[in-house]
Amino acid sequence: MNDIKKITSGERVKILRKELHLTLEKFGDKIGMKKNSISQIENGRNSLTEQTIKSICREYHVNYAWLVNGDGEMFSNDDAEIKDRIDQIMEGESEFHKTLIKSIINLDEESLLVIQKLIESLSNKNTD
Image 1 (spheres, rainbow, N blue to C red):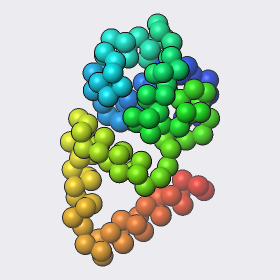
Image 2 (image 1 turned 90 degrees about the horizontal axis):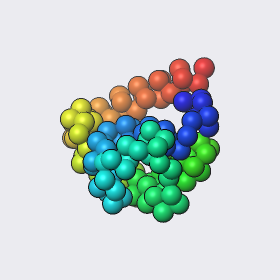
Image 3 (image 1 turned 180 degrees about the vertical axis):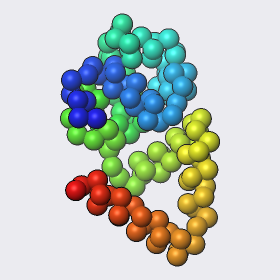
């Protein structure tokens, strides 16, 4: 989203929650908040506190600068965080995403190379 800096941090929370495929309740549970509180933040009725920002960044491996002002990527990148992200997907509600991860894990090397070439091809098209 090119206009990510133009929206509020509460709206970025909603984008994040949707990206994680979590309900208000499941998103809030992990950071110790009720679904109504998350809804009020997303809709701009309540502001994010520094404590809530830090909890979201810690629990969901979110880039602090992205959440606060829209700078950089949504997620921090390293292997431990990728593992945690996979765990979040597997705990989420999207059956498609769960099935996709399970399917990839069971692929043989030849099939993985086909997928790698497809991803590289799609990536090249997106940069053109």
